[in-house]
Length: 87
Image (cartoon, rainbow, N blue to C red; front, side, top):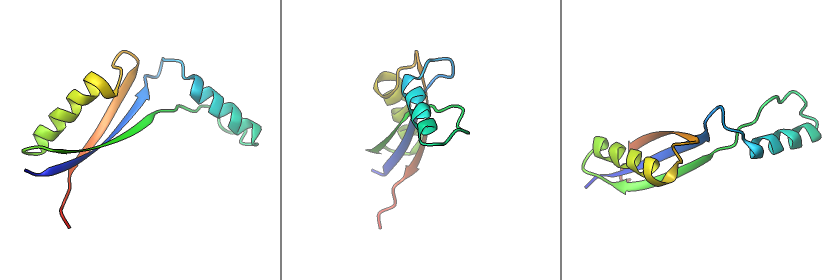
């Protein structure tokens, strides 16, 4: 069965307050980076899985995101799935 790797990016939805992003922005200002106007902080998750084909891998990753990896109420997610080529 082929092996796939997914790279998942999870970010707070645009209208959700991001206190971590605000703290990072303020820290950057303290360090002299006054031109920074906004910072949003998210997370990146990498998952390696076996699936029958790319469509099955994408379906599984979407289910993982919807059920556990992202909170659909306050977060959006995007992902890329690619087959791992044995080397």
